[in-house]
Length: 130
Image (cartoon, rainbow, N blue to C red; front, top):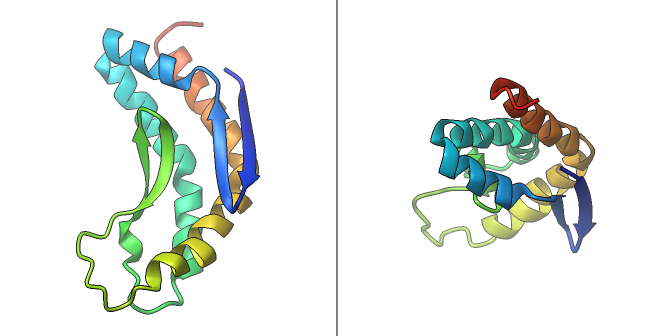
């Protein structure tokens, strides 16, 4: 699988060629393997979510424990999953993006690709496909 990273408009996108197809095939054959891959991909993105939390830790009122990596059929993303939105601080969304998520993603671009590749290599070895 080929991987590439691009930063445009403040967003960092890591493209893994064949990810969606591999994810779908794993789900059809063995759900445990799919869950293992999702877990490994979340762990690959964890340094970026940790960096995001550290960048935002100086701001009062931000729920840092709700910022975590998430694996979906399209890939891995870092999400802020606050359950309650009060509207008391509408600037928090922009603040989190501008001061936390975007800078952390841009800083972590170089290390995410090797981590994603290691996640796939580990799965291939674990399943005896190599």
